[in-house]
Structure formats: C-alpha cells, structure tokens
Image 1 (tube, helix red, strand yellow):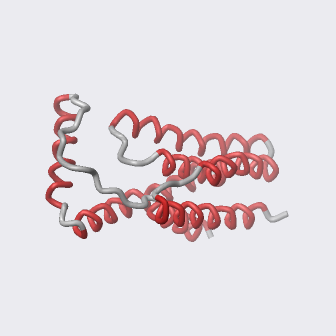
Image 2 (tube, one colour):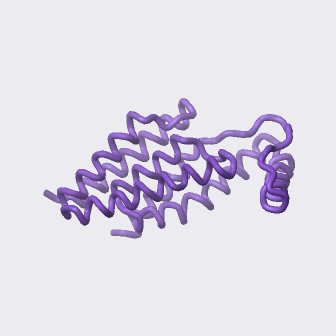
Length: 171
C-alpha cells in the first residue's frame, strides 16, 4: 500500500472540508479533525511502526501546544483551526507542520489585513494589535479594551494554503 499517496490524499480532503465549512459556517468541525488525528497516528504506525506513531505524536503535540499558546496570549485563532493544525501534524509529522505554519501564518496575516481593509477597519485593527502588544509584552496586562467587535475570517483557508505548499515542497 502506498501510504504516502494516501496521506497526501487525506491532507487534500481534510483542508478542503475544513475550508468549506469555515467559509460557509465559520467553523472547522471536530468530525473532520479528530478522526484525522486518529487516522494519522494509525497510518504512520502502519507505514513505519512505533517510530511512525512517535512522529505523528510529535506533530499532534506541536498542534496542541499551539492551542495552549493561543489560550495564554489571547485567542486570536479558533480552536477548530488549532485542531486542524494538530490533525495535519498527526498525519504528516512535525517537519511537514513547520512548512504549513511558515506559509499559513504570513498568509493569514495578509488575509487579516485584506479583511480589515475591506471592512474599513484597518486603522482600528492596527490600533487594537498595538494596544495588545504593548499591554501584554510591556505591562503584562491580558484584558483588551472595548474597541468594537473583532473581524473574523476563515483562517482554515490560510492553513490549507500552507498544507498545499507543504505537499508541493515535499514532492
């Protein structure tokens, strides 16, 4: 069995499903991410035995560490997005995840700027970001001021871009 082709196909399915539901409903559902975590560990185990499982667990751990980090520093990425990253890590391992994040983080930043511009709220968004950085890093304050509602956008699209780039990089 060609485990690499199966993993690649699963990655494409996963990021497509997550992107569609995130655009349409504003959520990445557990019904997609949790089975992928289990399947990733299983496929890695079938392909490489215990070292494969360990590789999948490392990728899963990186994704879950991101969840803890976002909870500590203010939740700017949704839990579904973090579980999507963790699922990709369980499926393809930590080195794949590094490429995903190296592409998805700046792509997500560009998307955030585009959404803020489209809604005429770039100045407010930059002011909010500056306040957060100053208060968190300089003063250690975690509460943010009331400056209106946050803009939301489907971050799964940025993660999908990172995953597709990682597949291309790996081929």
